[in-house]
Length: 213
Image 1 (spheres, one colour):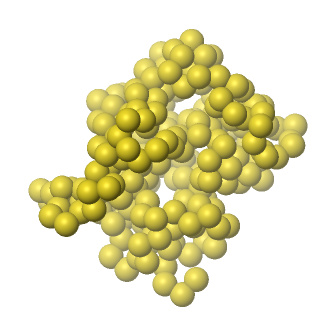
Image 2 (tube, helix red, strand yellow):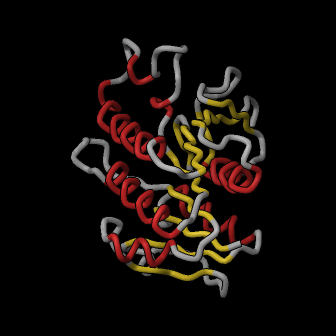
C-alpha cells in the first residue's frame, strides 16, 4: 500500500505518518516544511517538499499512490483558503491520476444537527468557528462534486494525544454518546482503518472518544 499524506506536519498528520509506517505502508509526506519537522526516520517514508496549490507538484506526488490522506490545516480567520482550495487541487489531481480513495479531515460543523440543518447553521454556534467551518464545507463540496471514493471525517476538539482505541463513529451525524473530543491518535487510527474498510464511502463521519478514557 502506498499512501500520500497532505498536512503531514500537523498534529493529526504526524499521527497518520507514524501509524501508516507502523502498518508497513510506503508513505509520502507532502508539504512546505516536511524537512524541518520532526518526522520519523524510516526507509518507507519519502519526504516531498512542495506547494499545495501547484497542480504539477500535487499531481506528481499523487500519481501511482493507492490512497490519499488529507489533514490540511490553517488559521481560523477565513483568510486562509488552504482547506478549501487545497482540497480542490487534490481532488482535481486525483481524478487526473485515476486515484480514487481519499480520507480527509473536516470539522464537526459540517455534520447534520437534524435532517435539514448543519451543526454550523444552528443558532448559538460559536461565531469564531464560522470562518473555518465554511472552509471545511467548501472542501466537502469539492469532494461531493467529484468521482472519488471519499470519506470526510468531522471531529470535535482534537487533543494532542496517542490512540486509545476507545472511540465511536456515526455517519453524517455526531455520535450520540461521545465526549466532544478526540485524540489525534484515535482520529488517525480511524482514518487508516476506514481507508481500507470503506464502510463510509461518500459520507461524512462524526467521531468522538468514549467516556472514561
